[in-house]
Image (cartoon, rainbow, N blue to C red; front, top):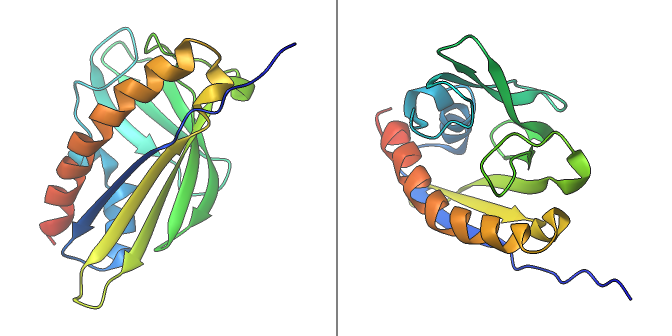
Length: 159
C-alpha cells in the first residue's frame, strides 16, 4: 500500500516598519535588491532575480552565462495582501519543472495596529517531492527562510 506522509510546513514571521503595500512591492518587484546573489540554482553565478507581477508569471533568475532559470510560478497575485508561488527546485538545489513535485510558498502581508506590517511566510507541500527529498528540502528551507526574511526586512525598512 502506498501512503503519503504529510511533512509539516515551514512557517516564518517577521515584522517590517512599513505598509503592507510597500512590503509587498519590495518583496516582489524589488526582490533583486535584496535576494542574495549566492542563492541561485543556475550553473553560472546569479546576476538578477525577477518575479513577474501576475498569476501565471515566473519567478526566475538570470545568470552570468545568459541562462534564465525558473524558481517557480506565481499561483496567486493579490498586491499588498499576499502571493503564492510554486517552488520548482529539487532537494539537490537544481531546477525541477515537474509541477506535480513542486512545493508551494505563500507570503502574506498584514497591517498591524502599530503601523508595522507582519509578513507571514509558509512553505508547504514538501510531501509532493517524495521521500527522502521532501524532508531534505524542508530542513534546508527551515533554516534558510529566516535569514532571507531578514534581508528582505532590511530592504523594506529603507523606505
